[in-house]
Amino acid sequence: MDKRSFIKTGIVGIGGLIAAPLIANARITRYLSSDKPGKFKLPDLPYSYDALEPHIDTQTLTIHHSMHHAGYTKRFNAAVKEAGITGKNVSEILKEVSKYPVAVRNNGGGYLNHKMYWKVMSPKGGGKPTGELLEAINNSFDSFENFKNEFTAAAKSKFGSGWAWLIVADGVLKVTSTANQDNPIMDVAEVKGFPILCIDVWEHAYYLKYKNRRADYIEAFWNVINWETVAFKFNKATS
Ligand code: MN
Image (cartoon, rainbow, N blue to C red; front, side, top):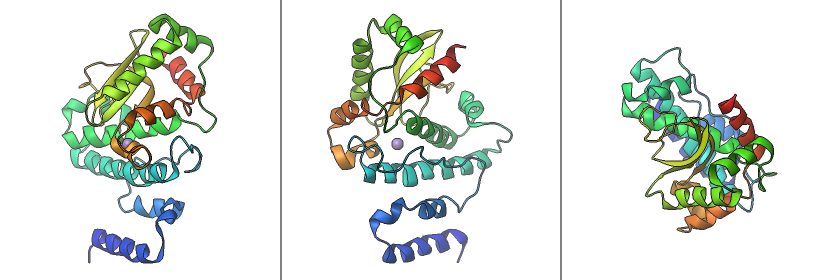
């Protein structure tokens, strides 16, 4: 029995003993993500799986992190190895992603995008930004409300799977969206820039709770946005 089929069998065996809620168990997360050790690691969430209730439900967050993000991480490591890429961080790889096989683009994007998505949310999130970030939003969009409407529209209207973004491009803030797991730092992105806020609009990000009501998920997302993190990224992008 090779390692992969041993692990699959192992998981089936464990599945018989452990009920679905225990998927959240950190030991299982490590187990699932440990069969192909690589340079890029699945980051821990900066909060517990139930911390964003009721806006982002526990089951969605658990599966999204421990299965989807773990999967992108695992496949990104494999794709990087396969492409013979060494000595580069994920940003450096994605900035020249057109040079590499599509598995690097899809899984590297999936790896980095989710890392950012967890960080721009917080159980203490919501409300409005302040200071220089709010000023920049007012300068670029006339008002916070206009920005909120534009970002919401980009997220709602993204056809199929993808992401909506707030980016810094040429010193101004812009709302944009990408398909699949593309990121605005990629050389293949139509609108390029440094992302400071993102929302995942793949169905796996909301379907268990919101079903086909993507708009309700997007509205709920405003209650968990971690503006401190967004402001930190804004400062990094503009300094
Ligand atoms: Mn996702």
